Length: 337
Image (cartoon, rainbow, N blue to C red; front, top):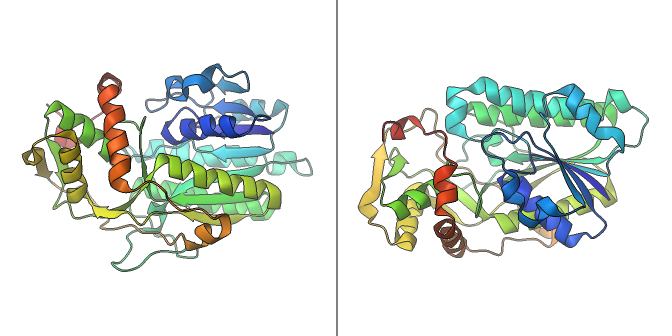
């Protein structure tokens, strides 16, 4: 089976590439990743040297470069490549539009009108719970909920999702969208809240917490995410129909409690938690209904949040220089340190 994975050198993509190669002896993977700030071949570990894997440094928004990838065709495309950090999107929304919207459209175009009538792969679009906007307390959003994004990042992903569904309908693409809650774990780029807080707690530096810190999120360990995504991908190959699935978690907590737990696990003083001005348009809560996924794929998260955080803290402790070395940008409240 031939796979095209975009963004396969990033956090989620690299975990997926490694696990797919481990589970599928007959797999070959072309990994299209531009290696921008959050991507690194080092994330792939032994997969980078596996003869079944080939990395191509490709910009997904470049139609000529993307079209060149199709010389041999693919059975499955898994599209991870994206700009993903809300804070960055508030400062440079154009970058998010180019990668997330134009990049997705460019990829889809190589499978749509240009190859009408030709054998085309199953396509998996990796998306986010943020496309739905804030979830009222006591509710969860199903896959039929309206999209109501409230940040440039979320808006760019929502547009990409709608484009994908339009292409699937117009050109009869076999397409699946997978929307997930917050994923965390080893090798996550240290601008995100879990590795940011862990690396700073280990160093005895303040943990900057937006507003009152009572924004609530659901948390999914990366191994559980990859397992769920692989089950969905394998099923999509068999059934070849376009659908939307959720990968969720019942581990919901507020950011203040998350910061306190991280301090505890790192042996850090909770006084390091420092409230800073809230970011613009900060959604209070996200929550997904993923019961359909559980029933359809016999899948549910296996890693409790505390245990997953313990593993993440242990990995960051062992790789603290990796984390410190890879932080090239800071949100406004950390500049000047």
